[in-house]
Length: 315
Image (cartoon, rainbow, N blue to C red; front, side, top):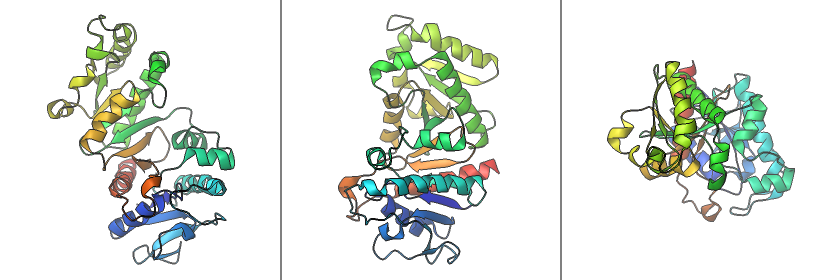
């Protein structure tokens, strides 16, 4: 189960946590890293792909980014190299040269400035490379899996963007992924309401009555084990979490606050609905600590292990 890692933003902590993850996992999981080897931390033992077994030195699929790395200061000249590394990682997974892709964090502004990157982020670019119309973001740790039905939009736009079609697609994609990628034969999905107290019978909003409940009833009629709409403030204590395999939430913070509270360092970003496995650490580029040797690789290690486990579940 070989995992390929795309370098992400060179000026961030991506190169550091990739090397730290390799050091922690080199006897457990074969890893390949795509990027400019000049951007790796000083003293990193690396060798070109095919010239190392991956234990004595990190296997590198070398790319020339044409400019040095300055920790904490993104360089627009690196943008095309970062994009190419993602694309090459996808190609290796789709061709069977690797079992799964783990992506280090990118800096979207640098990609837009340096290469006219036309996508809001990693997820949308990966969907385009895979030729799929719809993908879903999951955040996962040992204690919780959460899926936001709407992601990076202002809160005031959530009621408009949260349609029956969007919610249905999110739940069905989550259900399929729990079976295929996590080996859960009969997934149990809890669905949050949009409003406080899940609308409290229409007194605090009617989205639950007019849209969310009909969607859930239709999916229950198809045999899915779904609970909800539930009041989000009572969904995430230990006894509640034991009753479901994943929680579908209505907006970004409703999903991410509980998981980051439970496991801030160990959360993993998973893209559901792709024809290949993709995970990522659940944090950004961390320019403020890049190059200082203090970056925590816990989330990257968790992302690699989850990618391995998901690839094994897919067979």
